[in-house]
Image (tube, rainbow, N blue to C red; front, side, top):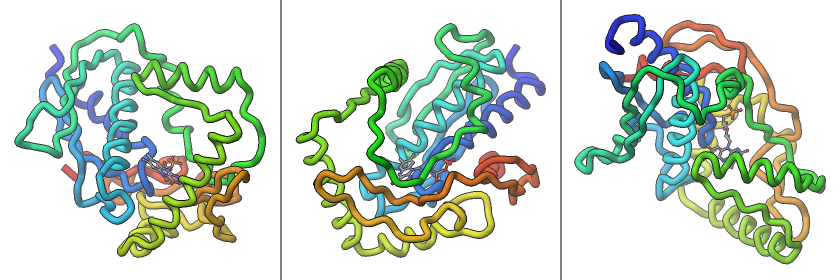
Length: 251
Ligand SMILES: Cc1cc2nc3c(=O)[nH]c(=O)nc-3n(C[C@H](O)[C@H](O)[C@H](O)COP(=O)(O)O)c2cc1C
């Protein structure tokens, strides 16, 4: 039976690991409900960034990353997950119901579970280094395994057009009322378990993307930092870029 105490603890551990997922501004816009044989993923609309992410796409992508991490974490614990997306039209923030049965799914790379807590975003500016074709092919394959399409933009003219589009998007964001405030609220934090730590911010802000130069991003020139920080909700200390919100405590 799945619905015993031990398995509930397993589900909780898997959810905690899932909370290491990347998210826009590290806003961690998710909530979880644990049932007897299921885990439910909900959007946490209090953490939505309407000026940065008007259509909520970044929020949903962030939750999608958490859902992926949950499946990997469950698989590593010997639980097979069947995901049902957007099951309830009356509850639009209910993004997925994850149904559980015992058994390791054949298609999940269990090595990914140990990588979850080690992974972190690298916000240093992109260089002109050409990503090797073999690596592009590998990344495209990884995306396809998750049902996503990754399209490398290798053609020079296409790259210039993309650079111009990114510059336009950056300028549009800069003119959007509330965007600066949101960025300020979620970045440069000295304490806490969410948002972008001050240590990860650029010493000199990167400019927008221009014509043929490599894409700039809202990032820094330093290496991604590791720090140990306590979770404000459950006091767990984890060594990671930052400790993650104890999402269970937010239910
Ligand atoms: C939907 C989405 C959008 C993101 N946008 C940016 C971005 O514009 N610039 C950037 O440097 N990082 C971006 N990130 C990365 C997040 O800032 C990063 O995942 C978050 O701060 C957590 O840090 P970690 O990945 O090191 O755990 C994005 C992540 C997601 C999921």
